[in-house]
Image 1 (cartoon, rainbow over the protein chains, first blue to last red):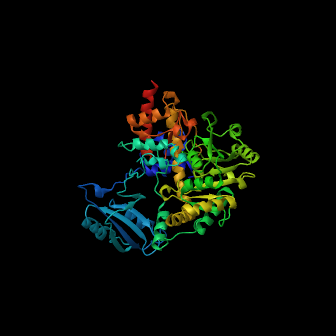
Image 2 (spheres, rainbow over the protein chains, first blue to last red):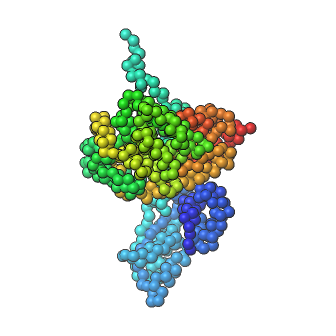
Amino acid sequence: MKVDKKEIEILELLEKNGRMDVHTIAQMVELSPEEVEQAIQKFEDQQIIHGYSTLIDWTEVLGYEGVTAMIDVKVTPVRGKGFNDVAERIYRFPEVKAVYLMSGAYDLSVSVEGKTMSQVARFVSEKLSTLDTVISTTTHFILKKYKHDGIIFGEDDNNDRRMPVSP
Amino acid sequence: MSSDTSRFIAEHVDSLKPSGIRRFFDLASTMENVISLGVGEPDFVTPWNVIEASYHSLEQGYTAYTANAGLLELRQLIAEYLQSAYAVPYRAEDQVIVTVGASQAIDIALRAILNPGDEVIIVEPCFVAYASAVTLAGGVPVSVGTQAANEFKLQPEELMNSITKRTKAIILCNPNNPTGTMLSREELLPIANLIQEHDLLVLSDEIYAELSYDDGYVSFASLPEMYERTILISGFSKSFAMTGWRLGYAAGPAALIQAMTKIHQYTIMCAPTMAQYGAVEALRSGSASVEQMKKSYRQRRNFVMTAFEDMGLMTNRPGGAFYIFPSIKETGLSSEEFAEALLIEEKVAVVPGSVFGESGEGYIRCSYATSMKQLTEAMKRIKRFVERRLI
């Protein structure tokens, strides 16, 4: 889908802050609120905007437990269908948060979330490794997230080091 | 023997008034949770690759002086940049000098050209340091005001009326601090004609040039016959978010830059080396960061402009920089009263227009170089304040 410069600006603003209201966006990109609304509707219809998610640093939430693992998966591509079939079989599992086809030493990069390490381990050994086309898996548990989706965790946005008034 | 040591202070220094911004800063810094629209600097941190390059230069042991005029490599990059961005050709060897901020470039330019009593025309409202810099260099500042009715654009006839036999130079800031006004080629040409006619020199402060929102920014030096009459002054503070690095430059006719280099050599020696290595990296790979910051400033400009219009405060449309200069005349308050009451009642710091010269009275300078979250809240508070005052 062809989008113009201002529409790209709308997407960038929403990517940074999905809760930014239509009126503010309209002022910032010099369009009417109706035009912005229409553009957003169009992006949603055309699946350019897939959803609005919130970036949460769960490690800061006391009482929440969860682990994430990145799994390198080597697979045998299926004649006529390449990697798509096996990718689909994998991404349908609710534990799986992301699947990417990769170049290099392995084929699929699979991000899996679970409540505990043993839950993730069980998913890998019982569900993922047992798929016909899967040759091997290498599981890496994420120990700490420093930066995710362009956002540095733990960095205070309002930490303005400037003096209150300057020339 | 008197213990009053102020008797030692030179008269021309003693006569300087402290900057109005300073007084306001003192007031604002005593208060907590103030939203500040009073800062004349970017809210971004210097792009990481620039910081990293500076670290690297220290690790490599580049901690000694550079040439007086600055690293040749940096001067070459500045010359290439001025050529590609504004089509003005300068030789790195003798037409470019790296300074401690654009402020020092202005200072040494004035000291290099002024004889005692020479007049320098200053277009108000303007950056607070121009007039004092002229005085400190032994010259006499002569103000020419601009009006909101003309979008704060310098009118050639008003310039003409203030030129005397003693006039030597004019300081132009385009885009302007504090109004954000940007002059187009058509608007600059008649000014250039007058300058030619009266044999004047121009100190063209182009520190905000990279932050111009409308296409077709024109450097004064690129106008016909102006190359030999212009000292182009700029720096890294605003466009690359490097205010604390204190790194600027001047480019111009070789004789003038050499005269400036003499003063620079005997007073500063050279600009800080680590900052110069950072600037090299900024010019090599920083243009994407500048574009991104500029886009963000433009969006915020649009936001605050509409917000001021909504609350009934007349405002010009800033073509560049990151300031907006709305009129507060409707409230019946002076700009100092407005800024002070706003600070005390709503904890929003803005700068009274009067500190930028007489023609700034009746306006306030708001910097929109701050987060959208802060801007949204600040506009809400200013609106509340204005509504109370208008009743």
